[in-house]
Amino acid sequence: MISSRLFYTAIMLFWISFLSLLALMLTFAPQGGVELAGLTLFAGSGLVNAAIAAMEAIGFSPVASSVVFGIMAGLNIAAAGLALFALLFSVLGEAPEQREARPLAEGAAACVALAAGLIVTVSLAGGEAGALLALQLAALGGMLLTAMPVAPAEIATDHAEDDGVSLLDSVIADHAASHAAFSAQLASLSRRGVTP
Image (cartoon, rainbow, N blue to C red; front, side, top):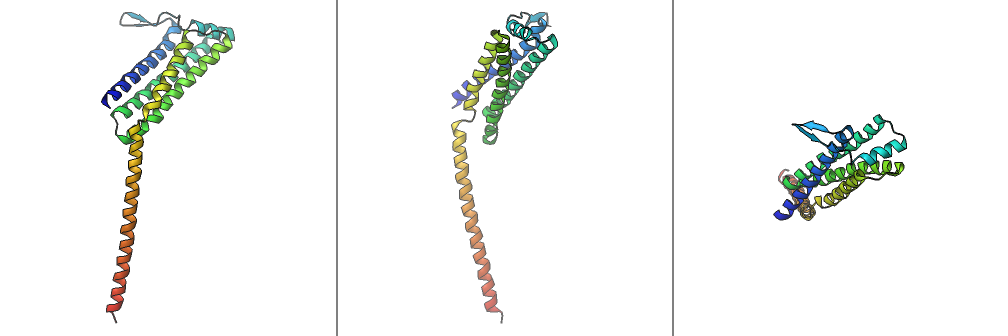
């Protein structure tokens, strides 16, 4: 069980890092990169050249192209954040938190699907399919595969056990209520018999 959690954690951390780097690349590569601590990061625009060419073929202005890249970067970073919370809830949380992890992972996959849908639309409409399209589709496949096992089997058995416990509690409560009602009726009858 621990080894499967460690494996799942490693896989999720990879995809969170991948989505974060993809968002940074979408933000800075069209602008020629960014300087950080003497290093030039995301300077090569080769990964986004096909997307830029597709947007130019469609007739997008540079501002519209930067808005499309910004939307895609925002969706990817939102997916990375949701996936991070899903990982924390799933691996470190108790049963209630683990149940909340699945909607978060599905939300992350939905954000990646929206970003992938946007780049697929732009690439097909502009007639240019490049590396960015492949990276975004890879991110979508990875998030779909990691979102599936977020609610492990033991959570489902916990649900069944909780249902069994709640059913037992309701049977005990009903029995106690009927016993209390019977005792109250008995006490009422005995008082009637004692008083003239």
